[in-house]
Image 1 (tube, helix red, strand yellow):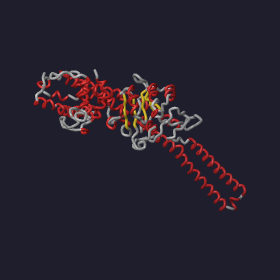
Image 2 (cartoon, helix red, strand yellow):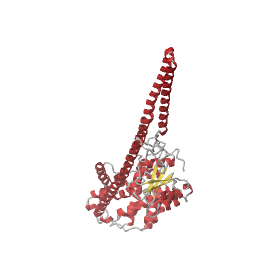
Image 3 (cartoon, rainbow, N blue to C red):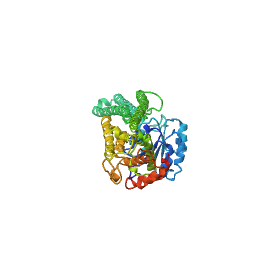
Image 4 (cartoon, helix red, strand yellow):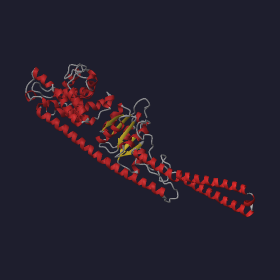
Length: 494
């Protein structure tokens, strides 16, 4: 495991379900750097450049399943001891055995609870946030038998014996008291030494009263207060979202008393809560996926609307989206701009980039569909589509209140025509003032424009387009991103 004492640990999460990756990012993002991959085929390339401190790995994925992938992970010297936690819907002992044999550190059953994810990740990385409610509560071993006690609760079984011993002592004192009294009566001491006898009897009376008081205290402490504290402590753990807690029996003889019935009722209710929670998580996941699907459909429809109006650039949106994916995959693999990219939702980002030209909806058809080269005045009007696009998305954002995908779309729309040397539009930003998303889109956008036919120009060849973009390094484009483009340029070739 890498040293995480002075930095946030890096977590790699691999799952083909965007909803799961989003949940993991939201649950762990505050305490960890979380990098997500939805394609298991990219894991090997990623590990060539980065060394995560822990890997969350889905078991069932297209292409490579989790068991195949863990073998790939262990081939890397830096990953031989990296903890791997499987995410799976399998609950069998056979799965647990196979996972352990392959070197998995633990597994989490889906649908999972966020607090379980946080605690298992914290346990494996040795990183514990004090701000997390319940983060210092240890997990119950799933294989623990009913006879074992959970260290978080104390049923106080032996206190019953203490109470019985107290009752025996009480009976012994009272018996001794009676024997002495009868002895005094038979020997005549009661008549001749009345004061002595009274003092002795008072002493035994005080002792008896003390035993009675002790009995009351012990009864309250051990036969009522302690079981109540046991249930209260277990209930506190349940309120922190841990429904695995169970109170073990307090009697070893298997008999039931009111305490055992109380514990059994608590365990039954906790089990029902766990069932309801798990099914509720299924419903939440289903609803979330529907929202994501609706979101993607909306983006696609709006993007197609732009293409319908600007028919001379048919296919442009799809090709730039593919170009951005190629560049992003390489940027991530080599760790370029890692501080920014680890915070991105890549799947959402790729959907959002379709709206980079949404502002063209506000451009006149006379300009947008002109079959020749634009005049200076017309080009100045066309340049406004970047601001128009930003404003359109901002208006949608005010209605949507919280939409990460709209934030990505707004940045793409506003900044994809800015240039590294500050000569771009609409704001004349330069170098790192330009958002990274805009700098990436600039390369994909220009490449597609170069290889496409326009009324005022022929299509350039792939080689010519690569040469032109390379020549724009440091003037039109981010030099580091141009290097990425040159390294992946063959993937752009149609």
